[in-house]
Length: 175
Image (cartoon, helix red, strand yellow):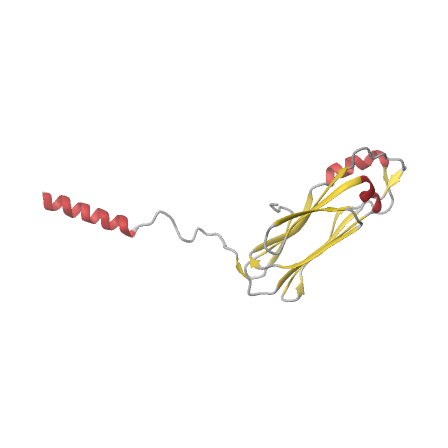
């Protein structure tokens, strides 16, 4: 009986030794240094009316995947950097908030914010222009400015870049 007990304990210990608590590969595609040359370029053009009326901030992921937020006070903004690890998510989010005490004194305003951005994979461009806000230079009535800003602030556009360099668009970026 003792022999059976010791043998059972020995078998149980051997079984526990050969099993693990979890998988070493949980299915996630871990970022690795890229073997491809991957760059990201973004430029935003803002109308003067938008700059005059709003505090504008742009948030983006840099080449290391870190979130960066910058205040924008001119009508143009641009960034270019190398993406160091793949997979990666790159993109830009634009936020605007009416400045304190701003008075809407004109009948119409040009409220325009456009984004031109793209990754390049081994020199091949993979992107296009995307509007954050666009009122087609017709002018937006003063009574509609706050409404349009409320609907469009926080828009984001970006790209998912897979480990093998495949590019897909995304509007869901975690900053």
